[in-house]
Image 1 (cartoon, rainbow, N blue to C red):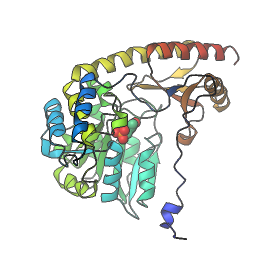
Image 2: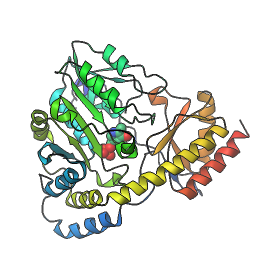
Image 3: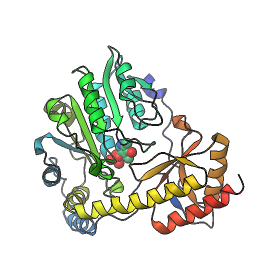
Image 4: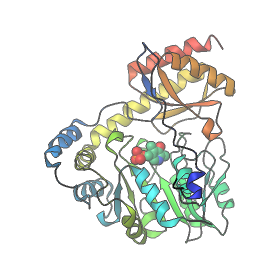
Length: 358
Ligand SMILES: *Cc1c(COP(=O)(O)O)cnc(C)c1O
């Protein structure tokens, strides 16, 4: 037998999300924060056209995609890196910068993948409490130790859906020693871009990385395209670790076309927000608490763990799969992605039904 590295052997096995509806029911997946509608028709056409070039390797410099991102966000192309999802970028940053003895600091309900990458690089995972299910920059500042190498904040947060202001994140950056790398993961940034100023300039002037993805607002989760705005000294290191052919030809073409179709993306965000806010009101009428969400999902807070499990059983029986939250220490919650209107109505009806058996 060949033994893994001890710290890899000690990690829990990867758990596939359970995505099967019971016999005879149609599956409504609210577990993965995927978009409620198909990619932009322009992205579909572009991907289709690109397939004829499938015998060749993709552009390792993501030239057209970077040009499109640069145009939309007004960023210099040479500070953008693209990944097979932002997860590849997060993993590559970790591989380049973390090792035994280093600490990653984040908050209690941070996006779980940051814990995974901390474990596989054999660094130490540290988290500080959130206040009212939102990141507290004061708590993060208080959690810094001499071993802190990376501070990670997803804003808006997953699974909470809450966001903190750009001003707070600028304050956090100012309070952090220069040598600490700050990662701001804006996977849901497009859902709240209208509310606040952008933070990309931090990656030019400070030791900060801003990450975005086409998986959520652009509806391209299956194509695996993420990107980030990096300080030059960091992009140089991370580039060494990325798979040189990481984003397929079809994915690069689809993502480029999707970036050029900002209207479609904005419309997706608008439709999602409308359904989300309506759903949140209906939940509150059922005495299920929700925080105001700035994403394409909501976190349903039940009175206790037993009640959340009870509701979940009723939903699963009807083919509705929300994400259970025990892994985050939020066993009294379920996270529900906003899906198309008809399905949202079906879900609300089933939750109404459940609330009468409470
Ligand atoms: C979905 C999500 C990601 C991963 O996105 P990919 O680009 O699909 O890898 C990263 N961060 C957060 C907070 C997410 O919710």
